[in-house]
Image (tube, rainbow, N blue to C red; front, side):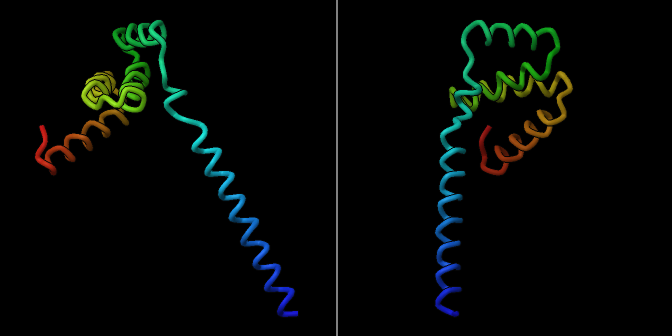
Length: 107
């Protein structure tokens, strides 16, 4: 009986390991940069929307610069615009970013 339960436990560990591997693979294969990549017309449309007061559009551009272009300076600029437009999460994001820069001596 003990031998049977050891096999069952071992089998379950293998199944769980495979399941975890599949989940990780699926998560990694779904690249956020593909979802955030903007063509020129989409970027221009979002920029226009942001200039007309749409904070969500500014957040999308900020995320584009952060994830796709990996340009933190431009990301911060657009996130600042979103914060000024009243986006509370962006206000928190900017505050956190500023605290990190102060902590590590960056400007």
